Length: 103
Image 1 (cartoon, rainbow, N blue to C red):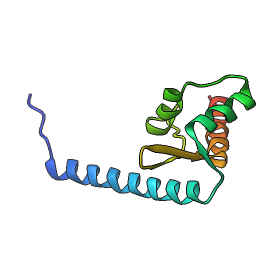
Image 2: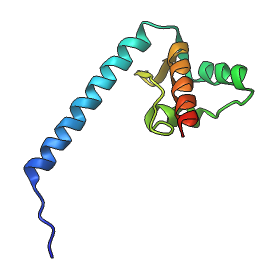
Image 3: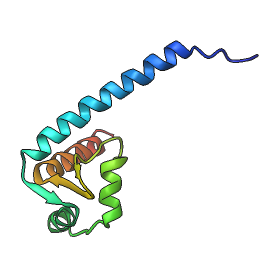
Image 4: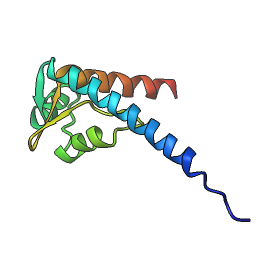
């Protein structure tokens, strides 16, 4: 049996997803730009000082773009440079920890 595709419903779902993503990006940009700025290299150092583990640059960028366990590290891209904040790193670690403890 052929599956019927409802293009209107699919378009509405896509638009809702885009709107949700836009709100997330606007909130993240607003927060990160008003907090203590950290480059990816500085973020790596901060995480290393806190945990003893130094994540690779690609790991930090993956946390920004794809997240970990459904939680993304807030950051903004200014030209070719990703910028996050100390506060965003703290929020990220807090949310990851809370999710781990809830499992």
